[in-house]
Image (cartoon, rainbow, N blue to C red):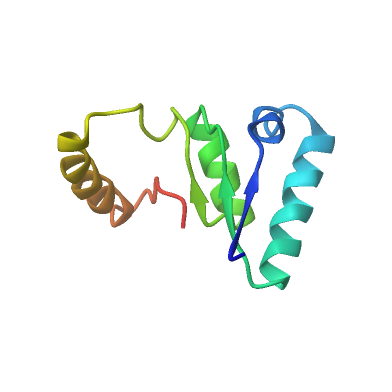
Length: 94
């Protein structure tokens, strides 16, 4: 095992539920202490993505990052995503 996924139910409450926020924060911290990468599931909003990034979440998935797409579109999306990660605003999870 090399990664831990945080369920979308905790991500959904990240912006408005202090208990969910603390659970996510503690989970990320514990996972990193164990040498695991953390994946946030069900990211729906830019605010959720930014908060997870600020908390040290390594990876994310959800409609707030990308909708399902045909396999032929993935390479173009990945190239755009990589360019955005280099932008000063840092929109991607680190």
